[in-house]
Length: 247
Image 1: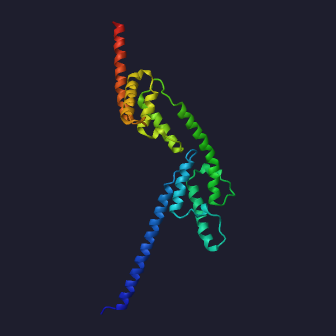
Image 2: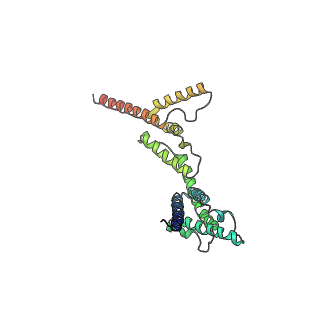
Image 3: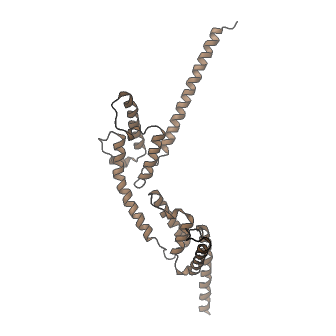
């Protein structure tokens, strides 16, 4: 005969075991998710503080750990427990996303996440401002380099555009067709035929649309294709001239 009391005990034990297992799985999932969030914060370098801070604040908010950055240390024991955890873990997360060589930027007597972040900001904001000035100067002096092909010019412009984006500078090079427009304007006189075609297309665009275009003529891919044809024509003309001189 089946002992009902034992069956009931086994049923309760199994239920408790499954609950514990589910709790463990949930904790493990939460731990894995937290690590994934922390890993999404880029490592701090000498030139990405703004991006680093933006990712950090988002992750701390998603993990409900930003309390110590938004409020001063409370006096209530109940509130203090949550605040202390926020403060402690926030500092740990910041430290783990900072290279060992940069940690000396923060004074040893800093004990709050708010002051920790402020110390980093005071140091790296100056570096970013200096780099921003350098990139602005590089943008102003950007020009065609003798004997480079249009692909090389466009790659230099795209690289500069990536720097501008990272530093939060207004970035006309982020638009592919506007980048092509700027590249055309930089091309030397040997591309005069192509530049004339582009100018005609600009005039046509204005007549048809009643406004000046904002980089809506050629993509960089089309510009490269047209320049390849132009360069081939130039090579042919140079070869023909050389043959004529030899005759």
